[in-house]
Image 1 (tube, rainbow, N blue to C red):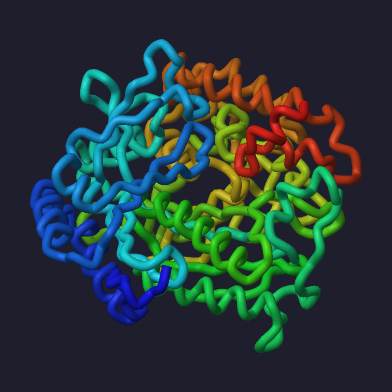
Image 2: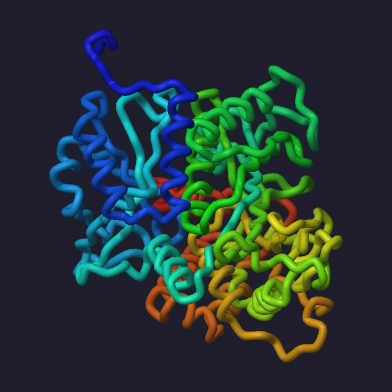
Length: 476
């Protein structure tokens, strides 16, 4: 159809940034949900150039799902959006398939028309069970509920920022075609901080960073990473649910921009053996009002007793929650000590092999960094496991846990076993959801080679949750 017949919303990147930063400020200030809802509905009803609202939610493994609703329909029926949960991996059984989507109006984004299409806005949704409560397998909703409880009980705001690494490979759908090619082709071989203006990696990073800025990410820095064709685009702290939403948006933006440029953005932890893998270093802190509760200028490494308790609990339960942070067969290739792998169950200010690092900080930036996180993990599950474990988990009776010579598993089978045997993961997720998650991980593992070896096997990608495709899965 000729474009002159259409009149859909297309805003400049500067206009988008202004709108998204205002929405972000409302979210940070915890403006009442009903106030934001009425504001958004009024906006949608009064803006004729919007044709559709994309509602996004994530399944148990962290795969992002998107439904486009006609704008006029959603204005009238926003409180009655149903879908078939049995079609979503890790959700309901077929006999009890009806679920409802609730709109989280605070998580509303204006998006660039050249990336998402003209006339669209996006919003995150909450999955609601038949009784009207948070659906137990919707970990975003579980995380949101926990965050709200911590604020109501203690006045705590849970803060997170993630450093998400990825690879840029030549060709569209390079991951889905891996079972045919058994190879990835770099677009750049420059390495850490090295990329010339105009080369494909630099153009991709620049384009992606522009989209992030327009969507209110408040970027900090971006650069090529250590491995060839590897990138990282950093942005500011956020409240924990917003931070997890931004991880999903970050990966969506990267994949969309890469596809438009004829390339593939991959978040496999170790797509190529022999070079550094990709991580998702997760920086966390807890604040109360304007005070960072992790800061103590007189404390060890200048962090507080609360922060050290948080670290000790993470290390105590490191084996229990490893599967939540390293959820794929391929993730265990990354936990290799030859490539700065954070596989040691200890904490350090300087040792990059430690599971938890204590970065240099000040009153504003004091934090702990959980390094043993893969970029393909469910971000809501990662942050829920870290924060609930850090605040409510057990503390080990082992002396000098921070110097303990223990290691994370080097294969998914051991991680699944640790996860299944743990009493803490039952408390974390409940028995039913815990078993569903373990079964999904077991099913993928059973379709992959038990011994990783020295080359990445097609099955690692073919049956990987982020690459999931019915046609490929049915080839097993």
